[in-house]
Every structure is written in structure tokens, then in C-alpha cells.
Length: 292
Image 1 (cartoon, rainbow, N blue to C red):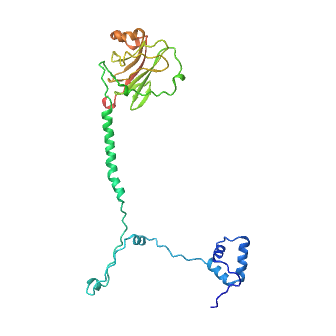
Image 2 (cartoon, rainbow, N blue to C red):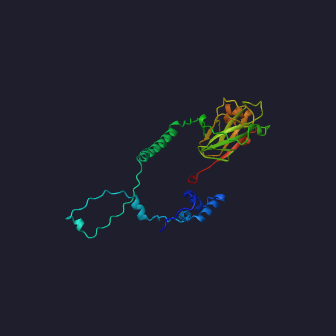
Image 3 (cartoon, rainbow, N blue to C red):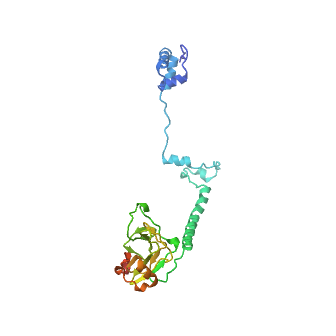
């Protein structure tokens, strides 16, 4: 075959490849195409660049993947002439060896201590809750249990005191706390619920009120009597208490002669409905179905 000779200045392989890819434009593309029409050698090279290249097919079958992942076995020596394996006409094919994923040692060591450490922390937290929870001193008065200061219910009011309407009379707001949830002026209670009182009164009446509970025909004073409460809009009365008897209860704020009798002669106080110097909130016990 006669060797082709370029009739002019040869075109570089890079420009021929760019022409085949369509990257040459304008005057440069027209110049190269004009040269290819006259030069058989460069035209043959351009046709070679434009010819499609057949790539080998990729075997993605399971056998091929397992064969690639299988560890290479060391070469075996050639069996001797008198070896029975050499005389066997057909040897059974060996089963393909599958790849085994081995967890790195650093992950194994972490898995060994993460679970015991987590269980240890959970046990320590449970012990801390039991040990650190303060006791609740029992009040000798009937049906009332005082709550230590660290157990006082948290006040959650939607408006500030300045935004609350100022009242000319005296009123109370009862707060009930159960499992961390605080409800204002509840209608029922469970044994173990905690209660606190907010007081609204006119300035100048400081120290003339007393919180009292009427339950099962008897009055009790659940809060300390030596704390003076400032008057204003929803002022928190110091202290908190629990009801320990499953009977209806009236939580009241007494003033005037009724407050004085609650301290000096509680037996002379009548029922809440008969008092004119008292404002009360009644709550009913909730009895579980299995105890009804």
C-alpha cells in the first residue's frame, strides 16, 4: 500500500480530535476542513479520530463480582505422576469464595464499651433521683402535707402582672401542679398533687389574710402563719401544700375576724358558705375506677 504524504502543513492530532468533537468553530474550523479536502493523509487521520471506539463490555454478574472479591490462593505445586489427583479425569470445581467484611478493631472496641457505659449512666441517674429528691415533712394538722421550698409549683401565667386587671375586692388563684404541668383554678385533684395560691388584694391590707383549707368538716392552715404577703395583682403566697385525703376540699383565703379565728379559735369557724370574710375555690377528688 502506498504511503500517504501530506500535501502541505500537517494538522496536529489535537486539532483533528477537537474537530471531531465539534470544538473548532469559525475561521479555524473552515481552515482545517479546507486542508482536509486537499490532503489525503490528514483526511485519513481525521477519519481515524472520528471513528467510534468499541469498549469492552463490563461483566456485572454475581459470579464475576465474587470472583474479583475472592482472595487469591497461593499457587499449588504440580502433583507427582503417581498422585491420585493427577490421574483423576475430572476434578470437582471449587466453590467460589465470597468476600468477608471484617469490622475494624477500633469499631469493635467502641461497641464493647458504649452499651455498658450507657446502662451505667442510666442507673446512676436513677439513683440520683432517689437520693437527691428532698423529703416532704408531714404537717401534724389533719389532711394537709406541707411541701418543702424546692418542691414548690412553678407559676406559668400568660400575662404580666401589669397587664392583669386590678380588682377592688380580694380574690385567689389556685395553682395545681401534677407531673410538671401547672393548671390554674382546677376543679379536681389526685392525692399527691401540689398546690400553691396567688392572692389579689388592695394595697394596705398586707398581713391580714390567711390561707385555709376546709375538708371533711375541719379547717387546716397549710401554710406558715408568720409570712406577710404584699398586696397586689396575683401575688404569690409563700409555701405550697398537698391534700392527703380523698374528700372534697375548699381552699380559701380568709381575712378580718375569720382570719383571726383561724389562728386563735379555729373551732369557732363555720363552713365556707357561712363566712362573709372568705373567698374559696372548691376541688373534688378523682377516684380511680378500680377504687370506686
